[in-house]
Length: 452
Image (cartoon, rainbow, N blue to C red):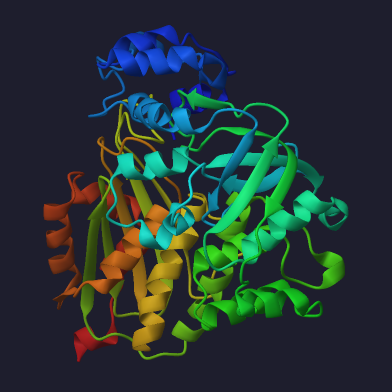
């Protein structure tokens, strides 16, 4: 990433003036709604933010739509439902464990102030194909109740933490009554790297209506001698959705009893993706090689994914390209390509590109395991300027899963694959080749079959 971007991310956040947002709204009633409820929202931005200068109208960031205004419009729809100190609604079910202040963190349920089937509000496996407005819309409705707890002493944190944990085990949307110490407050953060979420407030009391637990998760929870990784893999092999496993993992449901602890939601997502994909990867290494060059494709939310499979032993690489003005390259002047890779023996350090690396690895390993085949896999992602805001690692996992569901394009040579790639990407193919360790190796490597 460029120095300007890193400097911008490190800039101290400060309060912004909300009035310019009010002036941008086409509907006077919308502005009146926000003004009437001014205590329930606010804005922040970094010192280097272009948002104050742009005010949502000049698109100085290079995007085709204003991320701030998408959030504002979602907030307008949510505010009328979020008033007072009590929230009564159907949780998807959903919980959130923060990471700020670790090992003392805030944990609690996510509750929308509505009674209907909200199960898809926190089930990314069902989100593929939804627009950015839909995703931000239903995420903005989730009010986050916060209860401060030490990650290693959560079993001593009382009724609120106990109810939160039980909620994580349920199989369907569950009625929740949430009493708060003060009115929920949300921020329209004007930094591009913050994912959309609803308002939050400290919890005074929590009531969760009884609902059926997932018996598979319940069994793992009560097995206090079963280590966390085997528990996660057993649940995955039994068909439990990755999101459900991640949710239970986050509230300390697995592992030897004395070692159980809360895991911040962001960390639990990557941990489960890593554990499952590592196990699948070991199986993939025992299978015969594919016998052709394959290319899988998927495009969603202005992200173009191209997944190459080469007829060689298991190795893996993931590379992302970000245009100036996109989520992770907002202040840059040039396209940024960065990624990481691993050889046949795997890796022991955390990937440079973060959770996206493991989410994509999980998706490709699922297909190879299903086909009982082995290959060298290269995941290429081009995030285009119209990718307005980040929506989470799930987008990578489900985009690659979608690619794996498609019939692959098959080729006899690597050069034919690269020719196809050059027509699908806007970035010149040479830039991808230079950045890719595995493509470079494949082009240079000579095989015995070439001399047969």
